[in-house]
Length: 487
Image 1 (cartoon, rainbow, N blue to C red):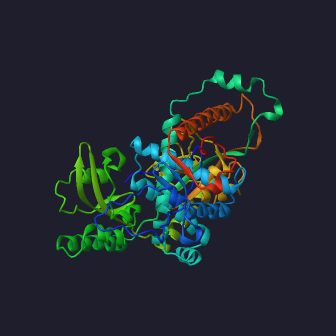
Image 2 (spheres, rainbow, N blue to C red):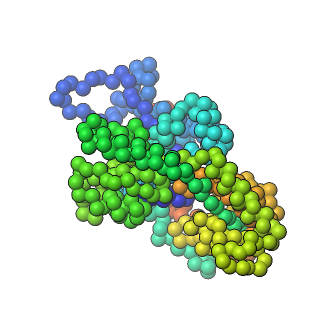
Image 3 (cartoon, rainbow, N blue to C red):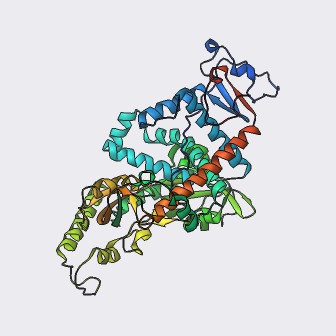
């Protein structure tokens, strides 16, 4: 179980769930099935299939339903494409296939816990917008479990593409001299526009979970263990039915994973299992409670399956947590501390003091509550554009003046858990034209992004040349971004 921090893709791709061809000839018993799409299948009469293969990239087929699904998603999210969407959409999917193919060759790994964390964030964001899980399920006409299953493959592919792109550009470094040289002769009206940026401090508290709810979850996991040991059900079946992790669709299987890719509590148990027939004791992590079963060990990696159950926090616990943080916020505004605090007497009560005594967010507590924006693997900054802040935080910060402390509010953290928070707007820089003295990091990011984009573009162009590509004749008149698709 590894934490997931989803950084923006260098290029954002999305792909719809694959559909199944209908009306294809049955394969005779004992006959080897050729899974490679053929020119005949590409040119199949429209009336003979419900779905249709329109592109083939390497050994990956792109279905008409993939394109329609991406078109629908883009319309819902207000995404616009350069040029004709009928050409741009299948090309984006085809480019994604190139990255995914190379990721497989380079053994790029994405763990199920990474995927699950991303899906949890997306679903919790939807819940916040809908108002409740019940309203979300009613709106989407799906259960939460069905949404998780539907999102799984998209998130896996996006993360694989992201990791592959990061690998391709990881050696690009930009010096201050290169930044100054790049912008030295640029006219004033061509300088990049820096949007409004803010620095935000935060205090979070996790509402306590009632012991009866924890016992309920543990009793259910003990029941699963008992049923598995008695042979009444298999571990993988129970994982598919009940696990609240994205790996549920794979029977809880996580794939071969190194120790460092799981949180320590989970890794310590998983790596000490020796008998594939036995089920581990109950393991508590920041994600919830697990039982684990060994599948196989290969060198310094372990393949295991698990069932994750998450105790639900009660409405009363959330309300109490919000009231407690509202009291802290009032004390900060009044600069009057509760006395004594942990046997200490302090003078003027500040937000920074409150962070030390009350915040349980380990990512910001050591930084006096200051939130950190991770630009990439090498770059962190305390400045956020409003759209880069967590949605719940941005909504509150937008109402604050510099130095103000918010009322308590409910939000979902990066682990998909409900927490309560108060924030302080530390600074706000209004939108302006970039200057080399005030916005060096912004200008450096512009140059770095340009060099990365050029390298990615060159890589895709070269990759197309060495990859098998077949395209339906309907797309042969398209003006594509990349040359080489049409042969």
